[in-house]
Length: 584
Image 1 (tube, rainbow, N blue to C red):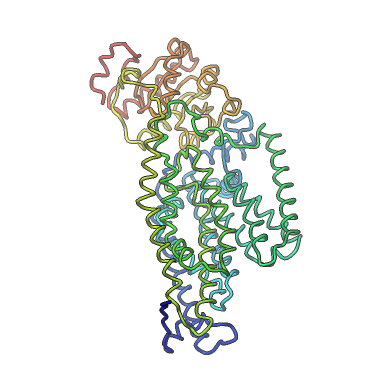
Image 2: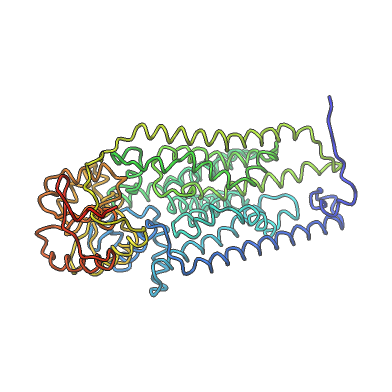
């Protein structure tokens, strides 16, 4: 049988000395350790410099994720004594999916009340990111058996190497969502399970259970990581520790049970409303389903993890596979469940990125075990065992790229076949005004809501920035994310019309089922004047609203500034609207 080997020259010992066994340490080992430490320090400084530059670049920028602003609205009401209410004085609502992130934003708002919501969200995303990078680096170092690799500074340098050029992470850091806090809590979880101190006795395993519960609070879809990773680490150890697994399971079950009881008591349900809204098929005629492609997002996340994935595929050995399985197997379960949901606002694999610490730590563990094994005896690198690993890399590349692209296209076509557009040609009146850029539209509606008389009740779907800037205004949510009727299975539109809002700002046209239900409801036709396409989606004002005069005055002022002409007459399907002749 042919085999190939490459014997390292003696001069290379300066670079590879750190990879030698502990009992053979020499001056070359010390130099190698210093080299690694210096490299780690340089990489860490480069990462810190890049994050600082991004922070400066985006400090004055407006957070572009409209959904992120709802945390500020809930924080306002929490600080105002209304509890977790969407509307001041309204019922307690589990609409903010991450309760931990909500508490974090509330704390920031309490500390610095003068900051705008956009600034709060930026700071709220940046601090967890910086902390997470350090915690992941320490977790990496705790798993390493080689003297140099066990240095936290080297671990942080490896983290920097993995994340420095990840556009996905940069995207999420600048969007103000709860993604970065979920990364931090998962980093703390992986540190607990990798640190022998937390898995050596029953009381310390309970600390790991608390860390698992905290990461569950950061995002409910972290459940698979929280519930499976600690038991798998203990079960796949060289000597499985079943007693500690039982202690963890009992402690975690008690915490989750108490959490469930408290949420039942407060909200009437332990699950966030987003669980129902983003389940497959919740919105009839939702034509944007194809845009939220889980296969595309999974592929994007894996491409961003190119370096960790390459190290794992090429370097995993008998001594490292257990930890790799313990950290990554729960990711397969979580990613599989995410694939069954409608990932609205899931841009750039937002729901997958909380798993980032597990991939980096698994890769570093593989690197450490490879260093201890390959060069530990005779400093000989045999190439034959690497051939199937190189082939595995090629197969992984094929799966991620051509196969992944085909799978994403298949998903898009399958969803397209199942979508029934409930607004065929002619079912929606011709817009009476031209279409606006999104930012101009949001700014205009925010101004309109703030200038309307006190007591005006609004109904809308794109309410993130609008609701954060106007926490005192009652807003009926048309998408069900902050409306308890979602959990009860009732009609969002019928419930909204029962509340008789003064103004309705229709949702985007992709919600064809909601719009069709609204346009065909006799109550809407009889009770509201309607301007199709106003502020892009359409605006309706209740005819008998007690605030009608003030509403019309505010609409006229904003309309004139925005469109350059006074408001046009309202119109309905089938009616002649000469004012709409110039509409786009």
